[in-house]
Amino acid sequence: MSKKLKLGVFGLGSVGQGFYELLDQSKNPNLEIKKIVIKNPTKTRTIESSIFSTTPTDILDDPEIDIVVELIDDATIALEILKQSLQRRKPVVTANKKMLAGNLEEIYWLQKKYETPVLYEGAVCGSIPIIRNLEMHYAYDRLESFEGIFNGSTNYILTKMIDEKINYDKALDQAQKLGFAESDPTLDVKGYDAKYKLAITIAHSFGCFVKPDHMLNIGIDKISAHDIRYAKRQGCAIKLIAKAEKIGNKIFGIVAPTLVPLENPLASVKNEFNAINLVGASTGLQMLTGKGAGSLPTGLVVLADVASLLAEFKYSYPKVIPGNPVTFEKDALINVHVSFVTPGAIHPTDFEEFTGGYQGEDAHFMTGWMRIKKLEEWVDRDDLSIMVNDDTHFKVYEPKKEREFSLA
Ligand code: HSE
Image (cartoon, rainbow, N blue to C red; front, top):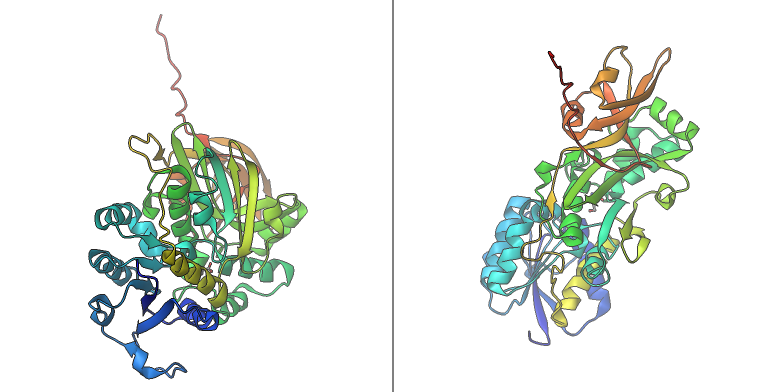
């Protein structure tokens, strides 16, 4: 690749602006933005207007543009931009987690086919260099599990609700105003955004590709004042946790509000900060933390990806190896705490292993091991609030043996 790189940028939203600002400040003589394709040309901007276009081919078909930086919102259009860029042998830097998670296996093969890299550190956990660490530092460690806070907006909302007693709607409004939330914030609060990041992290940790639709995500939108009081009494924080675990050759994963004991360092990760606890066979437990959302933290990571193309960096996917027997599986049990208002809303028999419950004047809960498949039936029920108990692992589901009757 030539020493001086010309960039074509798609999108100038929160991350795009952070990226532009930081590149401008860097005064790097080897990186220059030639064109920025935007959706809305009438918006007032401070940048000189000749750099803007609304025509994607102004970037894609410009032979002078070496690198495509894709920072738009729409996953379908982003995938098309990525494919067309790779076909033209233009490396792509993107932060579009939805697009990546839904198509990662195809994107892996396209990079090989066109011998052109795609880098996407900004797609997972904002400023934390997690993908790069999985690529390099953990490449030779056998990872056993990871769990983390993968969404800045929900961590911000939970911090404001629990520590500062600000109500949910106001906290969400603040997260939007600060540029943390997605343009459709249901992606944040219902756990989809964290699930996209989970799918990408699973591929780099365990070498298996999983479609996000195949994983369960439970949001923070049903957490009640009773849940918050219960968590405090138990010495726990409530965090939206994305976690995955390898049991034999099976990977299990989920995104859910989780009762995190205060001794777990994840409990003290606040506001828009993200964190990940990784457990490797050689390394044991390691934690990475940093800002998970925002214009500059994410813009910086995008800039770092672009700059590393100057050094011809690419992902090698060290865990994706031919004949890798590891697959994502759904049929596990997980230990949950389910609270509800109407008596009789759920029953102990709904659990594979019922471990206890409480019936009060105005709140009830039950705890125990449940099949993820059963939880999927409950996830859209407005009368139930589901939280995972964090100090437990997944258990592979084994059907109870039918009692055998003998007529003899
Ligand atoms: N909406 C995302 C978050 C932005 O809140 O984490 C960063 O990916």
